[in-house]
Length: 235
Image 1 (cartoon, rainbow, N blue to C red):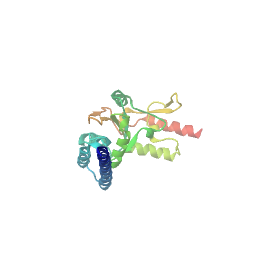
Image 2 (image 1 turned 30 degrees about the horizontal axis):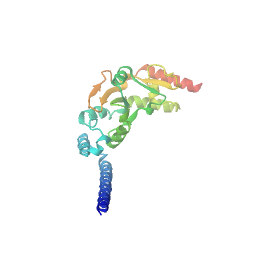
Image 3 (image 1 turned 180 degrees about the vertical axis):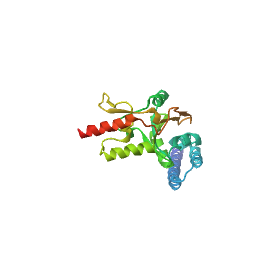
Image 4 (image 1 turned 120 degrees about the vertical axis):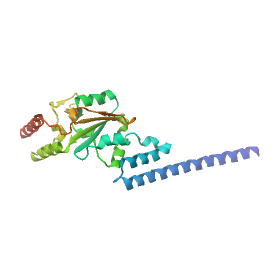
């Protein structure tokens, strides 16, 4: 008889645990659904202050605190990241070591073949930024900010289109040293450090500015690059 009672108690406890797990899963699903709905409703007019408050609400639910970072979306880092959007194209890149971030500030941004493999365009669309940040933040704590002035970008974009240079992008033009192939036969380009605004430690919110930053930097070298591309295509 005692054994049967123990078995019943064990089964009841097991059922209770299963029910508790289902309740927790249901709560998580509700939270995720409500979060997505709220982001969808406010994504077009979300201010930095509203975003920070919303992220604080999410952080209170500790199961989901790892999904987002509150530091990047604080007022100062977010302003530093997006303040040039009115007249520039903004891109972000992540790196693990601060020495690499400082090297990019000093020497420029090196990329293989396509600039867009490792540089993501961002804007005041906070939902888009949140998604891109969460998808790439594991690549490193240091978020590099690259800005290309609209005037410069549009000029060379128009020149590439006008001359039918479809195999090149604007970023391929904006280099002061000749591109070269690495050991993997990738073509390596170096975007000048003038287009590097600085970097943010998205874990701490610390901001590091580039004293040489100039998103409207132009040089006759860029026009020479364009001429070489035209000559290469003609041949």
